[in-house]
Length: 188
Image (cartoon, rainbow, N blue to C red; front, side, top):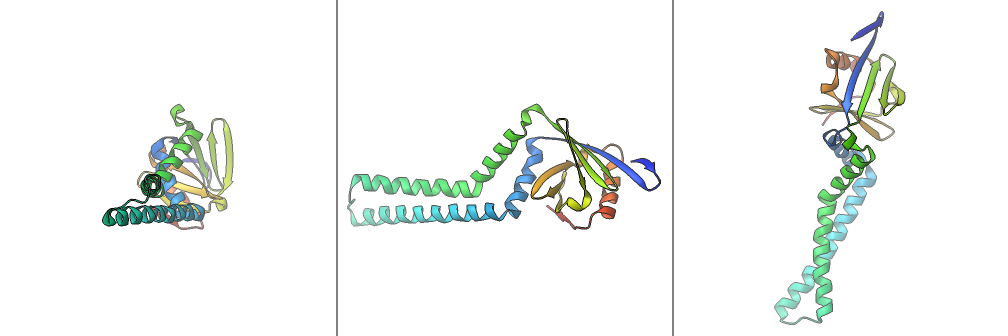
């Protein structure tokens, strides 16, 4: 903690932009974004419909000992497998695709580093030479995990690595949060 003037502190932190840092972000987006939830439900319902249609036709045709036509049977088998694929997309696939897109957007291969500076009035973020300064009141949500704090401003979430603080910075940061934040910190 650097004291600049009486009662004024400045805390620094570095967060490496890695795939590990974005996994909790994707989880939070899945929990909080209504459009994502709706998309997953729609895909899941479509999958169940395809599985139901395909399974019904195949089971009825098998027990009656007749298949109406080979192309129709192939279509029903494809419908069944598409349903299974869509269930995978709804449960696992969308999350993997989102993580891949976020990794590509931030070009994680280059090992970018987000530099944070926290003080009584603002949160400042520097990434690739670009700097953004936010008032603490701009933070809509703050989550605390085992390794990261994740803050959200206008539904855009970013990680703060607890291991990235210098010296006693993490403890100072936690004290600062209790003083400046008006929102609760949710555990993840």
